[in-house]
Image 1: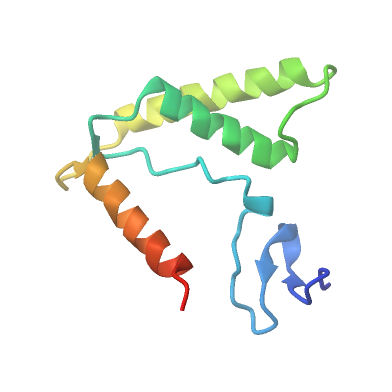
Image 2: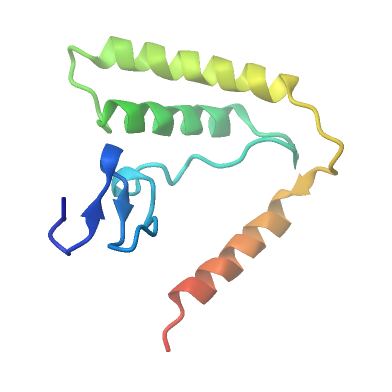
Length: 119
C-alpha cells in the first residue's frame, strides 16, 4: 500500500521506501520522548520514566488524549508501564561505565545538525 507521497506502508504502519528501507518505525513521530534510560549518571528521573511510559501508551493506543470513557484505563496503563520500567531499570546490571547526559546530548545535537544541515 502507498501513502500520499508514494511511500510503501508496511505492516503495523511502518513506513518503508520502495526498496524496503525503514523510514521511521514510529507512527507520526509519536515516540520522540522514548529514550534510553539505563546506565546514565545521574539516573533517570521519575518524570523521564513517566514521560516514556506515557509515550509508549500513546503509541499502543493510537491516541494522544483518550476519551473520557477510556481515561481511567489509559491512566492505569501509564502507571503500570511506569512501574514496570522502574522495576526493570532497578534490576538491570552492566559493566559499562555510566554515560554522561551532557555528552550524549551534545552527540545528539551534532547528529541533528549534520542531518538537517542545508547544502
